[in-house]
Length: 507
Image (tube, rainbow, N blue to C red; front, side, top):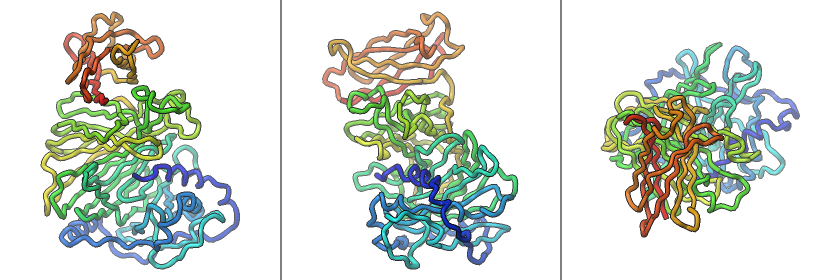
């Protein structure tokens, strides 16, 4: 697992007053143009898939042997951003240095009027502290990623809204949010005992936007031992930020364990497992639940877990309407963290376009004792996998922002789990959001609680005076069981009143 605080550290350095020191000519430069058509990326991915995989070039070993503290002591000087001197261009492009966890340089080209011009590598576009080590520079060096900035809140102030860096990882934020979970182009063999494969975006083509444009287009070429891919991102910043993604995947081998539209997040603890951690904060997580609106229109909410052993959950479906990892804890007091600001981290909602067919929304939860590691993965797993020599196309929209309610029914605000009085079983308390659809007389609401094992009570429904919404509480006894699946829902006159709450309890 990668350390997950790179972007936050680099963003903090981006505001460093060190950039105000000294003067120099803007650094990012473009090489000569060649004709470009978006279909070229598709053709390149298709052609590459018919040939054996060749690993990309690596930067000198000295660059990957540096410490994390060394890597964050070099950063891009935003005075060198592309289009910095073009007020009519509504976008700024920054780049990241290679090294440490980013051994493979990538190609970046700028597209304008049907022509693509490669971005020339220039070490002078970076600023650094005196702690940055003296490393060799040669023609194997290159940029490791790109960052996009635009005028989001104030004229003349260009704020970042998206980053592509590392394998096929990318991040985005709604205006006013801070970076949290990541998305990826593709996941292969996640949680496999044989090890996971991480496809890489090897090249990017950024279309130069017209004056006044509010949507920015990025093309990307993906390559890995098992497949190639061509991607198109249409990114519209704001609150929320949206990304319309079209991906074409060309397998070199049969892919059985493949994840489409994967998300990667962090969940350490909340009020379901708070007792396991000695920490002054009430909770620590980027996101607190998986939300699904399945093909039948049913809305599901699965609180995340930090299990003692790796666990994988598959929610079988056909043509899902949407799914994503969301952060429903939105108050500072939910975390009491003045630095990480977890309450401002965006959720990501995925809306498939077209026919995705049968498969499963898959949730992987990896044990972690530290918040610096991503331990949650979520993706769509096609039932039949992807066959060698085929071409699979998936289109979807990613929405990054603060919205937490999807589908139908009142949503779950919080889940709390703990021992009952005198160890007489375990209590689960589920707070639902207030809504006009909830009757004043809660006795009219039907409670449905089910479990796959153990003994579970019928449940009690009361109004929470703080939230204004109903709270469902029930007790269960595990007996000798080590794993129990729970399902709960509130109904009114036989119809769903709330979304479906799901949970996997493990000993």
